[in-house]
Image (cartoon, rainbow, N blue to C red):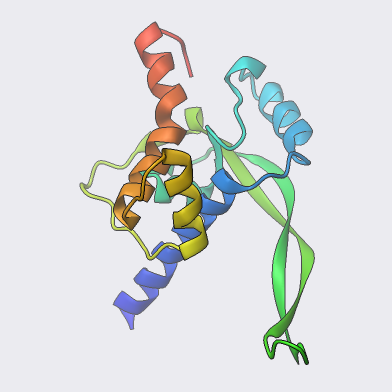
Length: 165
C-alpha cells in the first residue's frame, strides 16, 4: 500500500507540473505579481508558468519549498466528474469548480539532493503537446526533462549572468 500511495502522489505532482506549464490562463497573474512583489521579489524576476509553481509542481521538478516559506494564494478551476453519465458518450459529466492553492517562487525553493527523480506516467495529450513544441517525438522521460529544462532556463540564465533570484 505504501508504494502505491507514493506512486499516486508522484503522479499527482507530475500532473500538477503539466497543468502549470501547459495552462493557458492568465487570470492569476495580477495576484502573483502583487503577492511576490510584496515579498520583495522584483517583478522582472516573477515569471508565472516558468519560475512560479505549486508545492507539488516544484517537487516534480526536483526542488522543495524551504521550511517556513509562505507563498501566494491563487484561485484555479478544477474539473469535477459527476456520477451522472452523458447519454451520448457514456462518459461521466464534468464541470469546473474553483479551488484555492498556493504558489511559490523559485527563490523560495532548493534543489533536492537525494538523486534521480522518478517520473509518473504522462497523459498522451500532454506528451503530444510537448513533442510538437520540441519539434520531435519525445519519450515520457524526455518530455519531463524538456519541461524541467524549459522551467529552469531562466534560473540558469540568472545564475550565469550574475542575476539574483
